[in-house]
Length: 306
Image (cartoon, rainbow, N blue to C red; front, side, top):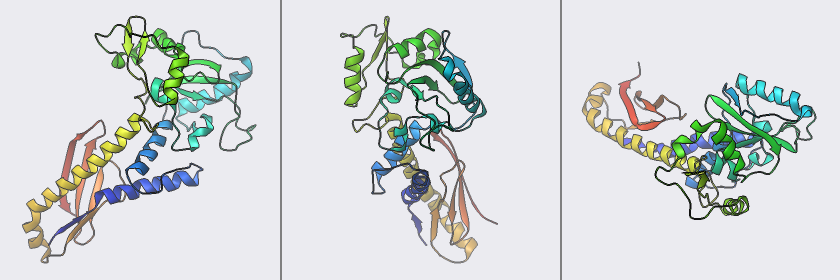
């Protein structure tokens, strides 16, 4: 009796299922091969799409907007509070999984258009507007910074609004002990850096900060998205080793229970938490629960289905 495993293959199939669903909704992918670059492109896209979940809205002290956009803003706010999807308020470039969102990756800031859904020329998106909402979207909160002209992707004033209104968002990114950069970077220089997928440090007063959005890879992908992809693949490899260890520990009892020596073949069809590895030949399974914030915190339970 032996153990057959291809958990990376199972993982690729799960991602492929998600990708096909996204393609059906109009999203476009460049990578063709089902490899690490394909996985990275998927996570680059996922990093840019706000997860639909209820969020509390917090507004900067001087937050305001044009009267003609007020009702549209109220509709958007209602969607955010209720936890509805706001993907159609994003840039149309969201459909390109390969696109590099420099402002999100460098500043951690999302921009949302404020047009009406019913007046849009493109059914997939709300009407485009010159004035847009700049905001920071966290798991439970939405921080409204300002409504301003389109195109301020590298404007340090947006970070200054965060510092003046929501300084807690900056704390974890402060480089302790660093009080000044040798060269003060202008918005024009920062824009060029972003164009070539370089994320410079941020200086505000006598404090220096790293990237609020996690930074960018040299290929233009989100660093957070790429690290997420790598961590998931490492986790799958770790599970494969653990499943092999469990098999070796229980091999004799499995033979005794089944009365045969048919191979075990563990697979998963959905990459969920908890995760279930199921052996279709003999009916054994491994239940796996892990901490998404720390994938080293894992509990695994081996048993036979009744």
